[in-house]
Every structure is written in structure tokens, then in C-alpha cells.
Amino acid sequence: MSLVSKFARSGIKTLGLNLRIPQIQVRDFTSCQASLSKSSNIRFITEDYGVFECYSFEAMISIPIPKADKPSLFTPEGRKLALRGMRHSAGNLFGIGMIKLSLKGWKPRVFVEEAEELYKRMNTAYASGDIETLQQICLPSFYQKMKGEIKERKGKFLWEQIETIEPSRLITARSGRLADSLTLSQVVVCLNTRQRVTSFDSRGSKIREPITQDVREYYVFQRMISQKKSSWQVYGKISPKPLSMILAKK
Image (tube, rainbow, N blue to C red; front, side, top):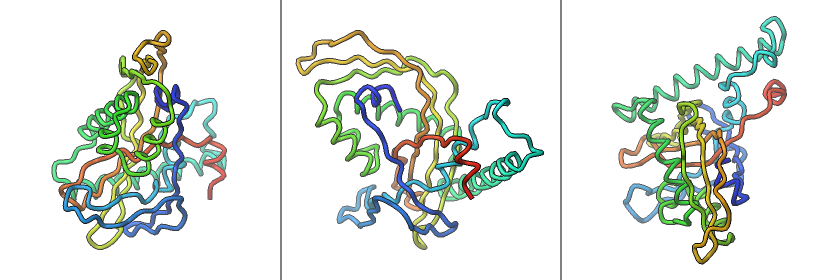
């Protein structure tokens, strides 16, 4: 998790959802809100359908596995991993293709830069307790979780991103239809940065010296791409599964 989240002892629970393209089938989830709002603003629908299930193991597939740990293609495990890797790549092509069809001029590289900015805004707002900004850029379930953590903690934090250790990259892109006129996309981005957090008490006095740490995170960004006035928002964070779990999955 981000350094500020770790420092505040927070966590994010990944929700589950099964995806069948082109129609999303919700089967297993802990939160599902799909109520229309009376407002005609951008967020006219609560877009909380859970994280696409494939992310739970496909994020790991896209992460380079140390050569010493990677099973040989001459083994059943190696062939299984290679097959899943190909399926993952095909799924990405489809997911990106649907986004490009819906959002003219959309480019993965430009999107990753936008995702980086959302990530910075989110951490800065979370650290300072700016719940208004969090409500704008985060999906409801994630926003409610961070809002609760902010209210429970004491003092404030100053979050800083010192540098980017390696370029952020798009890991997974998936798209699916919720209905004939509603198409949802989720994109996972890997962010590897060096961060610094300084803690202050309620009176604004620095409690201790800043803590600096390298942080690698995988965040899900979501958008209802069928709605032109929609925008990308932060859904939450996922954690790569161990290789043994990936290979055990049918």
C-alpha cells in the first residue's frame, strides 16, 4: 500500500466479480450499488460493481517472474502459466479496443499519466484529510473507507512523492457491458515510487522525522466509458497473488 496508507494502518479489501464479455454477470460480491441519481451530473450512476475477478491472478501474470522461480515450458505448470499469459494479453487487446472505440483519441500512455496524477491527488488528499477531493476522484466504496479512516485517526500527514523509481505501466484492461447502453471499463496500473510521509499532531506540530520508503502498488481505475461526461476514478487497490495460487486456479 502507499506509504501514507501504511503509516495510517489502513487497508483495502478487493471485491470479487465474475466477468463474461460482452455482458458482465455479477455473481459474488460484497458491495453492489446500481441506483440512478436524481442529478444529471457526471456521476449520475453509482458505479460500484466490484473488481473484475480476473485481476486477482492476471495482475501477477503480467509481473516479471524471477527466472529462478519461473517454471519451465516443458512442465505442466510452465505451460499453464504461458497459456494464461496469452489469454491475459488477448483480454487486454479486447479491453483496450473497447475503450478506444468509446473514447476517441484514448491512448494507454496518456491514460497512465492521468492515472499517476489521480494517484498523487488521492494520496495527498488522504494524508491531509481532504475528503471533498477524495469524493471527487474515488468510487463510493473506496471513498467511504478512506473517509472513515480519516475520521478515526489523530493528527494529519504530509505525503510527498519524491521520485518515480520506474515508469508506471498499464497491467490489465477489461471492459464489459452492464446493459445495452452501459459499458464499464477497469484498468490496473502499476506505480513504483519513492514516497515520504511526515506526521503532525492536531496542533500542527511535527511528531517525528519524515519516513521515506519505496512503494510498488497496483491500483484499479474505473470509468463508465459509454457515458461521454464520465471520468476515470480510483476504484481501489489489488495485490498480486502468489505464483502457487495462480497455478492452482482452474
